[in-house]
Length: 69
Image (cartoon, rainbow, N blue to C red; front, side, top):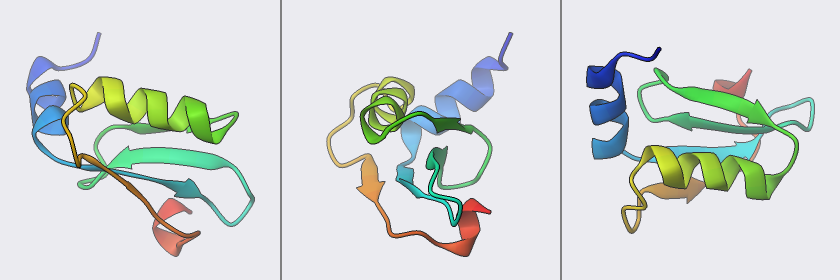
């Protein structure tokens, strides 16, 4: 089970959603503590929304960057 303090931190900060250089959809918090690889954009956004408690402005779509590799 995930650490509840990590969940709280993720909810308090934003998430980055974009593709890695291999074309996979990735979502992760800005600190890189919580995230995952997803089958499509909708799944990545769904994860980021759930982890950020649906906070407005918590998700940023970003271009493929080395931070996803």
